[in-house]
Length: 463
Image (cartoon, rainbow, N blue to C red; front, top):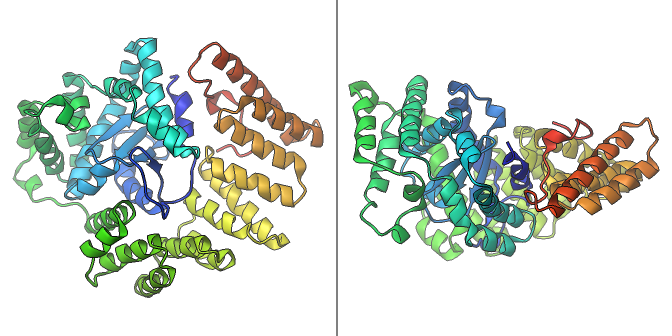
């Protein structure tokens, strides 16, 4: 399905949540929040007969209460939905419904039925998100929130029959997991209350997911006496509060955060540390984090934030220790692996570069479409004078960023330094062929000339 061609771009990382202000439409990534969301998605994908390893997450800074299934097993979350969901039950209910759309192949049928012009418009909306992730957030915002966003809403405007089918599939998944059904009902009831508003005032979720009272009542009927008393596993509640506090601390002004989280609970102090960090009061932020680490010494995300603060305050060498601890505690995060490598590359010593290479290779094994990891990998290989591998890493990044001519140039450069029987030489040849094909397609007005890794044979850095 051609829509897959675009989605690899969405996962190029720009690093963790940052100290500056976020503008509406900005795509963001955070290892802790993504892990929390995967605790919902992995079980839901399993009971739906899908591969949890193929679940992909996109978060966008938007106040709307929207979440949606996209092609390629991708879930789009607006921060407004994550912050305003009253409890884990609502998040679980909405995600169960969206996984129902994926398992029911509703998106595949919709995409096949769309006119090419609609496909292009919808891809333009997603492209806006991708551009923001590629280091030009203002351009991304303009694309994602411009006229093409209407095409995205049109694409996601599921038919009522599909909505009802996704409801019932979602209910089945929740029942199999012994998770409560009521969260889906309470969330949809909120949206139903907006039906009398003019369309311009309605939440995008309502406009893309048509509702009826019958749908809500059908879900209510599934709630028997036993399910009404069901709760999510206890850790979901703590994780939910952490996620909400962290998002608020990064998205709100520091002043507002410090006023809202002025208590002495661990949650309050976590939000306070982020607020002080964003105010560039690094000493206060680090002091609070040291307390938090004493209380939760096995929490990788406290060490991650400590490393981030040290790195951004000009203490790159000191940031290695907390980042290394974060990776030791949570080695399955490409974001953490790449962040540690970035810190290690501040030091040009041989051992540091070798360690950075190890972490970058792990990051790419976890996320093949991680542009920042490919970029750092090129730097590390360059410091080792491995010119073929350096050029090949830059060629891989060129494919990710649609820089077809650059990708071809770097692939040719890699072949200049490699031997013909080397895997680097063969991979460079694959990249040249793919870049040539995509360049020709883009000149013909194809789907933005965006490449599909599925069309490239497995090579260096393949997942």
